[in-house]
Image 1 (cartoon, rainbow, N blue to C red):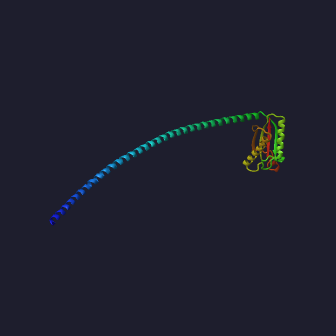
Image 2: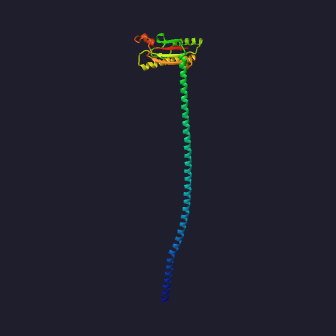
Image 3: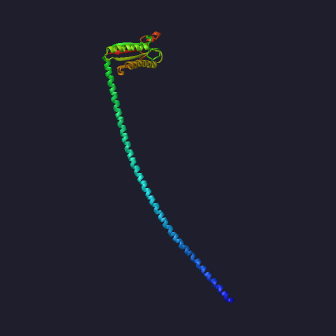
Length: 240
């Protein structure tokens, strides 16, 4: 009996060992099978993903090329617009230059005509506005009331006997102070007379000419107070 049980135990042990060996051998095969299947699936996924990425790259490349082409076209248009603007600017400059030349020529012609007109006229009135006659004060350019009255009288006479008069207005000073200051003072006094004739009596501006002689043409010696007062004057010469 004992011998028979021993034999059965050994047989059972041997059978289990064999089964275990078969299981151990089968496991790597199964793993390899599963790994092989996974590897195939991974390669397929990679190929699919790579294709999609390549498609996107191609699409982006085409989009970039299209954008670059539009940029080149826009640059061409901008360059064309710049050229047209530059040409228009040059034309405007040429037109301005031509207009300026025409204006200068017209002014020169007008000045020449005025000069000829003055040369053909004779002196009909001469009015002196000086400080010793209660007119311009020392260092002042304001036209006093007494001077305005004299100018009103001259204009009244001209209107009674109009002859297309022309006014020569001279500004004079004494020799006190710098020459540049005296020249400026004489011009401002002459301009004050011109402005009064234009604003109060509507004498055309082109019919009046102003000039400053400053201290250059005294009518009295500047050594005395009275002499300096007479030298500070404005002379209005009416030509007709």
